[in-house]
Amino acid sequence: MDNLSEARAKIDAIDNEIASLFRNRMEIVSEVAEVKRKAKISVTDPAREREILQRVTKTCGKEIEDQTRLLFSTIFDISRSKQRTLMAGVSSIATQIELAQKAREEFPNRSLVACPGAEGAYAQQAVSSMFTLPTILYFNSFEKVFEAVENGLCPYGVLPIENSAAGSVASVYDLMQRHEFHIVRALRLKVDHVLLAPRGVKLSQIKRVVSHPHALAQCTNFLRAHPEISQVPGSNTAVEAKKLGESGTPDTAVIASRRAAELYGLEVIADKISDAAFNYTRFICISKNLEIYPDAGKFSIMLSLPHRPGALGGIITKFSAINVNLTKLESRPVPGMDFEFSFVFDFEAPPSDKSVLALLTELSTNPEIEHFTFLGAYKER
Image 1 (cartoon, helix red, strand yellow):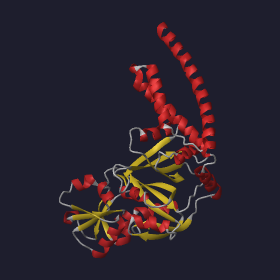
Image 2 (spheres, rainbow, N blue to C red):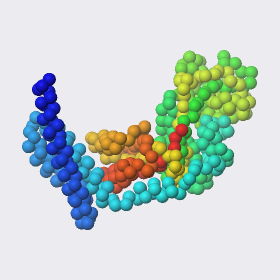
Image 3 (cartoon, rainbow, N blue to C red):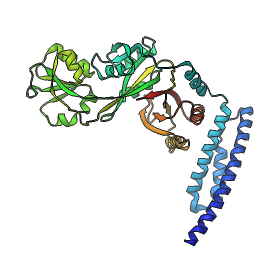
Image 4 (cartoon, rainbow, N blue to C red):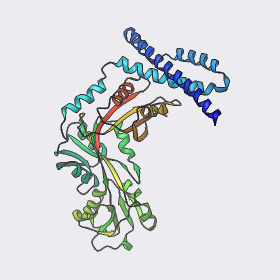
């Protein structure tokens, strides 16, 4: 035990020396940043970093060469981040966030809102939960909702982005790469799927069930228990319920909400058919302009990283370093680019957090990040 105490005392002394030297190094990094800013020199100097790695790994020896390279690569990353933040001066992204906060007092209770599907859709229920008095304009695809907002037809649009049972709505994440928008609100809506059929039809008569692929995926246990019923992907739960109400096809059923049964003259022939008792879908409300309200507590950003080892890990480490909780990380392939991916990060923080603004500044000015998009700061409930 005495030997352990002695060893720890030696480590404490070394740690204090390392901390002092690290502080000195970062002070000199600030001086370097000022020189580079005035001379308009790039932050990144790969040749110098290789030179340092050659020197320090030789000094530390072969036995801990990998650990030495990792330590100094981390120091280089921290130094580059500090230089970029200092050289950026007044960050355009930080300024945009601060101005957007000052411009908004409270989320509107009424507006024209673009929504996929039809009356009775879960997206319509999400709209009605976000807005007290909405005027809803329905569209037959997710992309049409993005276009309605992007072209100024509707100030807001509401879209499903993920489900607790079926996972992310991949098509929405793909569309996020192609359209300009900002997230201004988010909502988790409890989804209670039921099986609907024309009045008088029994479950034993059903030969096929139609619904959105995500709804079908959320009811796999029920559908597996009825192998005689074929599954047909549809455009939207409420749209398919409306079609069935109009056609009255006796051998067809729809997975949708109980509200859709009331609206379209259908009957519930099977209840509680979701795989999970607590089945939630997350919806986002988007706008063309950046709007940040005082109750915002969540951020979303999108970026593309170079295809090399450690690129994503380095970004995640930056969030960890400022004690920010990442709540979601979604990757999607970049269209037309082999092995290139776009990443969406969701994380919790108030828009006034100076550490977060500094990180966003660094990410938005980092030339190694091929594309950076600030999606929004918003409240989620």
